[in-house]
Length: 450
Image 1 (tube, rainbow, N blue to C red):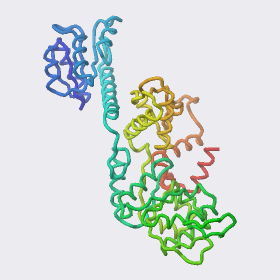
Image 2 (cartoon, one colour):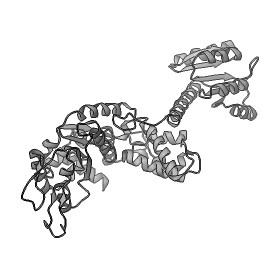
Image 3 (cartoon, rainbow, N blue to C red):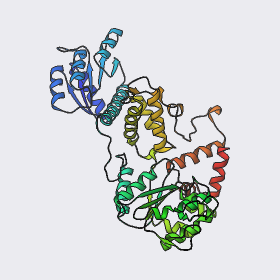
């Protein structure tokens, strides 16, 4: 329960407010003397102060000044029966978080207290991120303190100690290569090279040459022999990113190489042994690719011995602010800008957004905002429009007004989007929840995007 200190020299009014707020879940303490309130505040930890203005001894304005001077982390809500503009200005100048005039409903006061508490907690989080080093434990090199990231670190530590192939799955931009590097750093091959290649980035002939190598004259442009990446990674780790996009003709050759631990370069008569740990990554569902004939099932079983799921950013809570603060520091240093962090409003917008592009999208957003802002903090107006105006998808029938109602196809589209968001984009799980097979889900998704 939030601890609230009420200061009012009208004992009956203070007791009444305390009783009604206690019924609404607050832990309330009431003081009738401003001086005793300051002593109690120094000895105990309160999260918000509510004070009347007209009191014997110190006024509420003077009390507010002293509280904000000694404990700027505690918001003060000022209440007065004299709702003049001068009083309101004096309260704000004294550092009051909010200002209310009598008479008022207790529900309104409770709402204002909740808002003040939210402001305090968010301000503390932003300050902590700004003042503290945004360094993650060396075990993984990943920024984040959320439960999903802690579980990921624990899984990486266990997986790294084995030598079996690892499949890292997750959405685009979620940090799969970072996880692969963490597995390499903690494994038996940590002293060897970490060799990475994106299977979707090269055409099939070039990718084959890169992976397996070639001899001189193996094809028209092969003027010099080349050692393939499988052999180059010997003693270390070979990271095959976007393995789901590996061309189908190359898949049996890679499977044989992984099973035999030997590879035959293009144009060579002899096979060459290699000793590299294989870590692959994909942002697609390999099971679906196997069903559709785009990926070999035997290769999937060979590379999917140990699986590590990287959580999407939208499931990581306040890690968004931790990452944003670190990205701000880096971007400001590169650009030579005096930007030190996020405003409260910008932080709220970042927390509310769903981040379909994950960590990569957040980093691009912060780099843009750091370049555009004219202030020491990133403000809401510095963020991209899609983030400023973002609203979560909900399926609601809000009333009887026909203008608010939508066609059933639109309701279905919104609900599918909501289910996909809830399961982190996993189409297999979403189809199971919706009662579709995957082909039906893909068809409906294609129709909604058309």
